[in-house]
Length: 279
Image 1 (tube, helix red, strand yellow):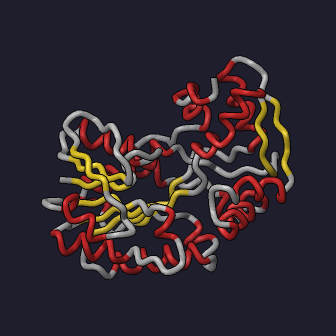
Image 2 (cartoon, one colour):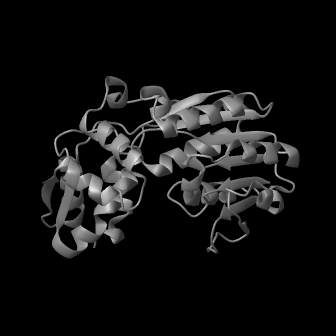
């Protein structure tokens, strides 16, 4: 049995589907009721209360751990989830971390994530750590404005990073869960090329077959919008990266191709599969 947390999200959903298609027994964990693939067991649980994971972890051999937002908050204890998993007999954990642990290690959320990485290394469990950079799926923030007004509004229009397709993250996670060769590996996951918000806008317009205008926000305007869905500190951290990426954050990593034997998917590939959101 493999347990997938965050199973209804942009990474957990394709991971659950891939594992089920590979003939694995899968338990999908989410905070709310959800539709899951046929043959997949679903458990509603909150990672902030690790004791509630006991039914999901019963009989599990492996765990994909994706932290919910409250487990990034001050005072949270995500390592308790690892202890609960070990107590349940889980032998392998694939942890979704972040590239910022390496590139910007001193922010509050990255310090906490580094501590969780360290706790996993010291847990006695087999482990694989995934450190993705920016996600292609963050473009879904623009979906409503594209549908309603044919416009993308974002800061730093001509500054890009190599955003990664969540489906690639899911495939690498599946490899880590199923193949002992990835034990003890830390993978940095990016897309195949740097792409700017203006370039992303052009890719969306090309896929739609109709013009989409790019409107550049100031940093303050962007933070005001982001702060409605994330802590202000995290919004500032994100804007620091988007506005002034370091050489390490601009680097295209070879790790997706190293694990999967193919190049990572492009942003245009992601758009093509997600066009319904923008129509």
